[in-house]
Length: 440
Image 1 (cartoon, rainbow, N blue to C red):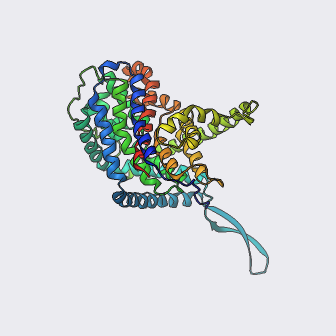
Image 2 (tube, rainbow, N blue to C red):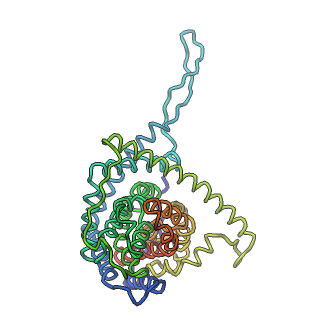
Image 3 (spheres, rainbow, N blue to C red):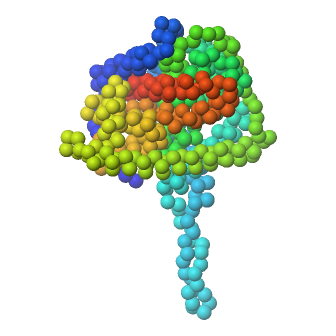
């Protein structure tokens, strides 16, 4: 295994203050993009920022962090070992070798087992299948519903958001952008425009538990990465509501202004059926991810070849250079040193234009590069900011998923899709600024 390679350095007070000011930058950008600037209610915004900082202080406190992150790291890596056991059983290689028979003649015999090669297809994609099955079991047993309801209750009481949008935001911590709205399925059709925008933003600002485990595999060389990604997903829930209520303020009266219970509709008759259904859903997701990466990585190579025909400052032009230039100010506002901002900016751009999968793969490659290009702090900030589904492909996914629940709202979903993706990006970036403030 190639050891992690990081540039030296720790956060100065100035860099922490820059990250803190970055939170204001994200909110200001959201306000400039708001469709009703003078109707913004600031309670959800202030409480959303406050919850982020309080939760961040609790989790990232040096004393608690060591305990919390150690617990999360052990748990996630143990679960990854279980996923690897399943993958090894299916993909282990069977090698032919020769033995001598009783007459001393060589006979080819198949039966020597060797470990599977730890490639993306044989290691990361099976992890998605395993974690999807595990999450399905936890939902079938009603465990996740109780956790989601508790988180939603806290956010509704503090931010003053409706029960339905709070539940959906809480569910997004654990499940994907099309599964989370299912916990409020009966209410989606009657949601206000602002609620619908908040539901979509929550889906863009977070990632599903199954793919998060895959990201841990990409970034295993970053210390305590499992704990950091879990923290990022938690912090992005209140951030998504805060940004959503700035960009699309509530001007109506939600029918779920009070607390609502999550929908507990069961699609399986027992645990085994739930596990099987989850595995099937995970397999579909894994195939989609694999196909998407084959296409997108190939298209990136094609685009870089075309752009490379043009030279800028003596170097071939590439998509990564363009994205780095465009997003380096965002990276800098999160507390990344300017000398590293183009590199992190490139990752932020790849997440938005392509997918977070590709961005995380490239971040993992940067942490093991022969020549260090990022400090550990910058790599961690990037891991927080990338932890969301905000990309162009996800707009179509949400239109199909949420539109299937409430076909009547498809025109609203289509009108809100692009802006909700921007809101989800800003929420994830704001989570990155929290990491910049609190991580040394």
